[in-house]
Length: 356
Image (cartoon, rainbow, N blue to C red; front, side, top):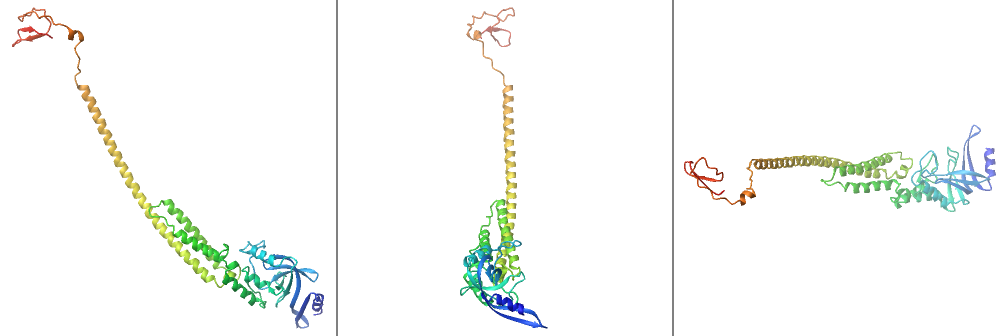
């Protein structure tokens, strides 16, 4: 007990402290500091943790009843609005700012950080973080003294759609749900026409599947731990958000089924068209072959007729221009030397010369 009183006395210049102790069997088993401390900000670590200086040394302070998205933990990914929450607190509590620290039942957490409500004048900084939508109300153990104020501030952020509750900030859960719903409406409304190419049906299906993956991821997130971020921010909205995502998922699955049926029908139609086209091509090819065969037969017949026709030989110029001599009179004697043209009398025994 004397050591505890001595510690309080050392900070008397900066701290007004009331000390309560429970003594069991002559020994201190629990001690709680209740009061306020004036300190100077030396660093903003993240959205809910600061370093301050008082009593001649620095202290790391974890703000009570507020939890902000992770931004600096090397073992955790940066969460939605984590950097923004840190920046918000840096602007509100720049280095050198004088603040007042007030405690609750437990004054340190498991990481040996001091637990305190931080006031900037009359402004309750812990609650202002929640009011801006940069964090959510939470409590650990018996530290609930300041919780109602933080919860009320968070309710204002929800109704005002600020920070984690804004649909204009694409990383928030409400924004992701709204974006999914909007994208699904647009994609479902762009179903390929019945006469579209198969590639169009395949492309449409790929878009639907991508949105279904997003819906599945969101449903897994909404089914996650409601006591930690990000779902801790949406405890009162989880059922509504989940219903919205499930409804979108149903629409996407129905659209995928319709797309598959339409694609199969188009595939069958294209196969039938291809079959008919092949038949028509075969018919035209057969007709062309028949035409060519007929033409070839006609040409062969013409060549054969030309080859069988007698050839005409015109008379020689000497014969055509020769003046026939008066034929000698001939009684048909076989001793005549006349070799020109003859006209035989009936019976063929006598003849008379004629001009050739």
